[in-house]
Image 1 (cartoon, rainbow, N blue to C red):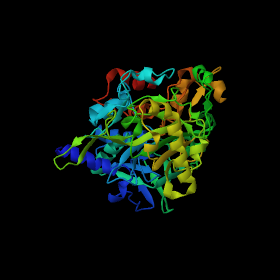
Image 2: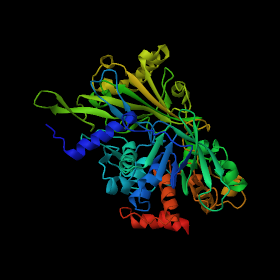
Image 3: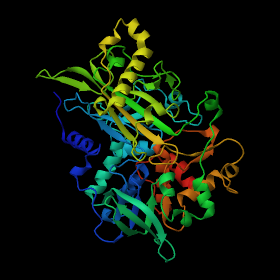
Image 4: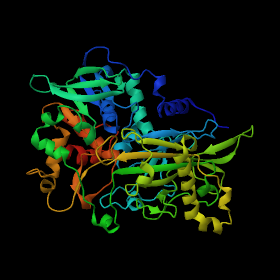
Length: 522
């Protein structure tokens, strides 16, 4: 039997907290005065915002964590990192942490790699059971990290969620009395008439609709483009040139993508289906790879369901034995032909998305759970999805001499919809340009990749004490397409910290820091 040591017990408590169970703690605190003074204010609790707040405190730059305020408009932390607990109807206390957004990293990507492995000391496993070279596995033009991609796991090798790293930082901030407010939205930015830094104040709206003014010396905005666009006063504070650069988005595709006829549509969609019998492992012995082989390019099955599978991308539990009482012992590892249950990623693409995104009721809420008891459309979708799975795998079942009639349909489909039309919760929207210069692509005279990066890091001017970070703000030639990673926004956080005089953390790779932070600020 497995003994729970105290660090493991605390990790499991942490896991319980991740997945929306924040109500059991003292969040959000209501702002108790009309004007709140907060020396270090952060708006947006995605990777970059939480990391910035965490680093201010763990570096010793801010002696009292209560001088740090973190505001997040939604009821959860993480932004585009959304580790969601799926609890199937049939489950006896079963929960599967499912990645609706960002979900993996290469340790060579020292942010977040060194943070997760050296500082937070969290457990990881290869995301792909075969542990292939990351660059070879991804096939992106400019991605050149080689250490195998990792996911975060618990003591039983079950998926803990990428979000658990964010949660670990939040818990340390909370324990040290940082002021953290969920359900508090930045709606306005204004200058208060004084010169120099600290003269930009925020207007925050609580979930109850009350408005508060927050003044700070340093302000960090971890907001995607669509959110900052909607903040009153932001455009005026940027000025015309910076706003034009900020507002520029392009999606010119590299030649390798164009040849494959990939045309991004209005959303990036992920979907998982929960099977009581994880047939791809238990019956077919498949533990990794994708179907069809070309990732991101779905095929449409006979009954009209688009699918783009990743066999190793959903959380599963496989039985590896029984304890003294005869109860099963489960592992999160993929064990071919064992008794397994869990989620299969059935779709991940930005084309052919309408079959899935029709279930989204509110563009601000990326999560959609589809269960047959929700209605006729939902029940029909689960049945159709199952037929599509069986149709595309019928030959494999036949070879193994297994009848598809023995497989029960999925009971839950979990979909995440990240909009690309600048409404609600958005997928990353960068500047990928193909012909000519960045200046001509964005219509901003003299704009270079370096000046773009500097402008957007300090959008209200270099001495305003206001910083911006999000993985939307990357401008590069299409041939340098690199994918969307937490790394991009974390590097913006680290550059902002360097501008404030916060040095390299001891746990972060020196060569990486010099190249990606120090050199970028010269």
